[in-house]
Image 1 (cartoon, rainbow, N blue to C red):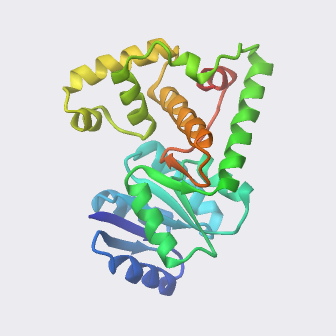
Image 2 (cartoon, one colour):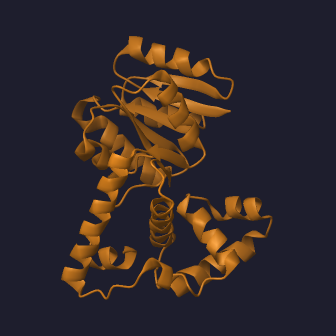
Length: 252
């Protein structure tokens, strides 16, 4: 069951959304609230899987809530609703850590599908948004090169030393899996997972799981583009937050 919390300042709309979601056998709306502050109180109490936050919440409430939840409760997937058809606004939400977005002209079926996808650690991204994400990654890579004299190395080259098992684990890291979830998925011990993760970080020459996950996501995008798909399945953690020159170089 996908436990969902709705954050919307208009009670009528929140009720309509709840009615549509509760009509599904695999989704349960555990609570509807009107503010980010209430959401923070209830999402942990109800052990939520997905939070729907309206972009029109006052004082950039949806973006601030998304950033905070992504940092403190990464197991909870944030979906920002009510967006206009703006690549800039969508990218801003994704960079804050949103697992997905629901636009104003999306249907109820679209909303339900996106809730299901983000609950599994995936989100459907349109070709237009995928193109904007590629451009943003290229911009960050250019910035890192200019600031640090970073020597370009292809992602495939970075991963040549990885074993087949390490590649499996890297893919799961990209989907936001914890060590325990990886162990359960691959039917191996948590200690073994930790050893593999340590080896992956060393071979990729990165320092954190987040940086390794970024590489995994870029590989996934490259494979999707190579396969010529018109829609791309992305892991949940789409945010790209660079706070220093060193971090920019290390994640790219």
